[in-house]
Image (cartoon, rainbow over all chains, first blue to last red; front, top):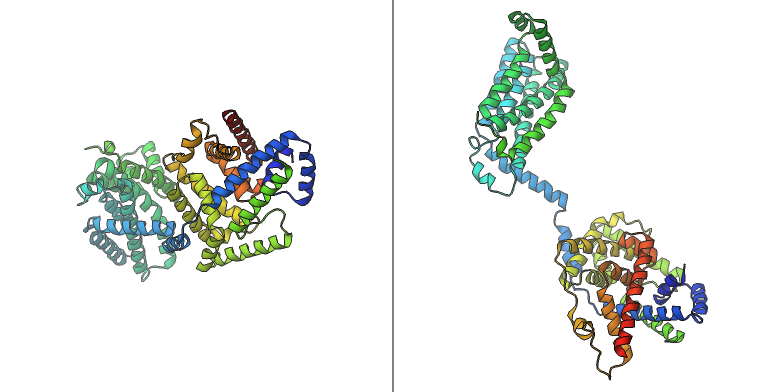
Length: 287
Length: 219
């Protein structure tokens, strides 16, 4: 420790006995240190006197305790999210809820009668795509104008609706699979459920993005065509156009819909793009 | 000023702090007593972590004045200092479980005050410097001749302290009023020990400059 530091600590009475004695010996013969010590003593006195004169406000501990009784930031954020979800659940087109349930019920009945559980695999993504296409835009939202004028951004509203409707679609699909368990072995249904989720997520994300860009009807039409195309038996399509390139394309196309990791990975950017587009009217094309 | 006089001021400073601050530990106090205070602090913070509201009141009774004084020096505004102190208590309450007792409780609390005050200053308009001293010493006018030279020097020191930036003033406050070691000051300010030393050195140069100007005025 050099003298400059020692003087400060000496003036602040922070040196131990040995250090203090050593320093006092030095300072007795050093005029520069004496001048510095005088300065630091004045500084110390001034600071102590002025700070000691300050009185801490009474009841501050009580006020702080009162604040600690309020919910913490994460809990507040959760409350806000819940409020947003609840408010948006009422703004989603009401017909969508029973319509989706009815189509799914129909799918279950057909699967039970025909003995083909795969029918649910075919129907569930279609329901998901249609319901998500109905989420955004003035024609589906009675409070669209009002929502645009509120501080909550469009993408947050869209995300809230997307979460609610996707959760509903998932619940419908799981309920349908539970009913089918009455007739089909659980192993088959498990495979079906796993195979279903990725195409459902991808088709939903695509339909949502297209509905923002080019409108609901176009979004439904395009996503349905894309989904139905992979469901048509490969041989039937090959006979229409006898070309090796066409056959290779059809094979690759079917493989694409049966690659869950790829579908899920593509769903994420599609979804992000949809949310990003929600706040940008310039991206909405009138077809 | 003789060495004896200087020692006298040192004793006065220590006794003033000890009277104001029940938990204040001077470097010359016994290790045994210091351990007891440290244990008391640990007990206090453990009780806070377990939700004992009385512990919070005790903490404020023990350290509130020091926390508020430091917040006030940093913000230069009583209302903001009050908010900062309150926020510090709330943070201390919520994070009491994280305090491991590796350092002194006061250093930990002052660290929270420092961080909260700097954050508050970032979003607040610049505060006005205190006006009284601007009038008496800022204009460079000599005080009335019958005033004691010592009093005049004190004024200049006060003025010199006010001219320092928040960071430099903070280091002086932490050393001289809060009784923190240079390492604790570095911890509170979240800066290297070298920065603390260079801030002290800058403060010394600045105050020496102010005092030498005051002597010229006095002549």
